[in-house]
Image (cartoon, rainbow, N blue to C red):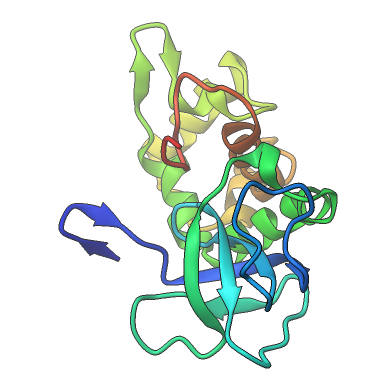
Length: 188
């Protein structure tokens, strides 16, 4: 969702539930109800939120975090960097990212159907771990003949192992490292 030029997450997945707040945090300790660390499903935004009173969470649970009508989140405390995630949240992140990608297959297969070069010598597909020049040319050749209908179609027509997992690795790389080109995430 976009408001006044800013982009907000509507739904997010719980990465960690910290009933007593984050240890060693510089955030004020008045958050007696604790915090949850979450990742948005649209922009892969890493966030911390204060739960509603008596709200309970399960790890990997999909929750509504939009502006109006939240039932489990009192308010969003703000964006956080990868380094601020707990060990638990970092451990859950790869599989949650993959879940997000698999649950919105059309959006992510469109990346393979529509991606363009980012420089005269490098295509956006080459930024995905496991895709080099040879595989990129196979993908471009096949999408020219007919757009890919899904991950299975892509795997059958191009010898590409588990596209969702490869895309998840790229998203994780964008979140955890200093990347020059961001395909799926936003700058911090």
